[in-house]
Image 1 (cartoon, rainbow, N blue to C red):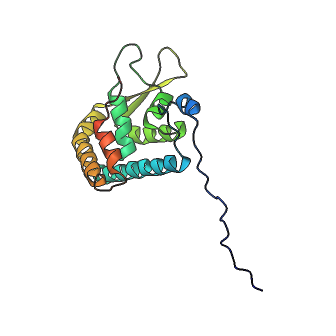
Image 2 (image 1 turned 90 degrees about the vertical axis):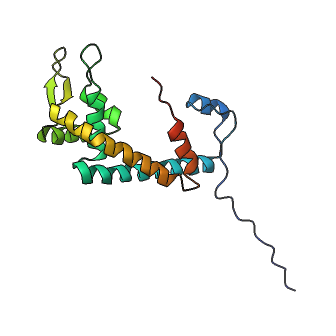
Image 3 (image 1 turned 90 degrees about the horizontal axis):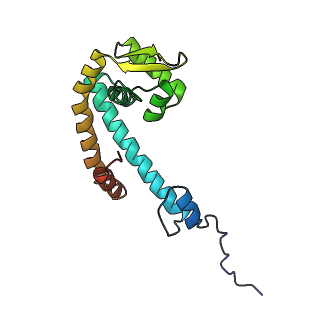
Amino acid sequence: MTQQSQPRQQPQLARRQAIPAGRAEQDGCRTSERVPARRLAAGWCALSALHGRIETYIERALQAAHDLSVREFSVLNVLSEQHDGPDGHLRMHQVAVSVVLSQSATTRLVARLEERGLLARYLCPDDRRGIYTDVTLGGLRLLEEARPTHDTALREALQDAAKSPELAPLVTVVETLVPSA
């Protein structure tokens, strides 16, 4: 007598996990619905892919036209917005936070830009432990020359990414995003 084989149930390898509404609000999310972990992961992967595409596109354009990396452009841009007066200068750790690099990576990057004559570092007059960094005139000139290249590459990267169904909604968000003041 042969037993009919019944289909075995597969173990649930990927159970849907959700973030409880209260926890989502604590984490800064404003959603009242529970979002399955797989959807969150897919969204994160799409966001990461969009960021990678854009960064690669801009990197190639800046390197080719100005011998400048995306990170170097970012540091020059952040530091160009400094001003005299209270809270007008950034310390190295603030620069690191602004360009999303570790403090040691930021220090190495700033040192390379300083060697090229694009930045200058000096001690904070109020706290001798603090170091400020300013963009030199040569750095400001290079930044202004590179800005149109950066902006054009960004637009082209977004146009290219908008053709992908997975990335198109994120492109729309980026294009309509208005940063808070």
